[in-house]
Image (cartoon, rainbow, N blue to C red; front, side):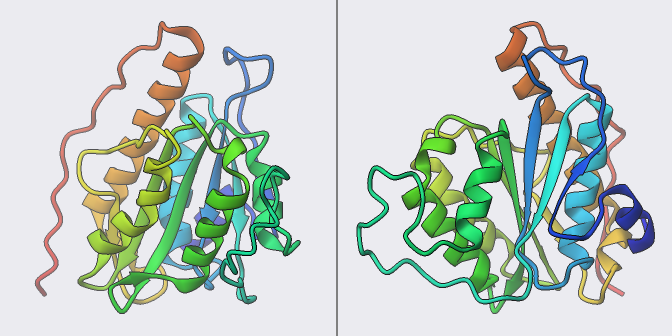
Length: 232
């Protein structure tokens, strides 16, 4: 999928809601928050999240993309001022994420890998979100998506996933670790296995959400397995 096609699927300004049909099993449509921690608004992380979003839509799940952007995200200062308030004392992007999450049923966090670690702004945002706004996260399914040129993706994935494991959040898996490979802008689209992994992740998350809502969800159909090698 091209960057242009992905942009058409999900818009790029601030938070955008992807049009999806309801017909779901709640008082409101089921909805997943997609959090893009890359400073590149339409880079490889965006492409992976776009693939997740389009597959969610096929399963009657809405999605909302939240772009952290290129601004600074300060780390937690351990001041304790957020206790019992549901929001951080630093009223910035983290509180806006918490506000968006309050109306969502699950979250998918995406970030590029820098020096074997997740992008720093995403780490800071997730740490503060988990500490100050755990009430809107507790019990909701979560998944992490990472993208790298070659190495460090599994370590980055584990780092971002650990706060969710402390908050009683079911971790949604796929057919492989939720990783895409690519360096240059748009290159991850060539990783056929990685893109398929995103679709399977979306199918599994959709199944979980519908099952929680109705207890009658059908297991997802599986695609023929793709395998991508990177020696060239």
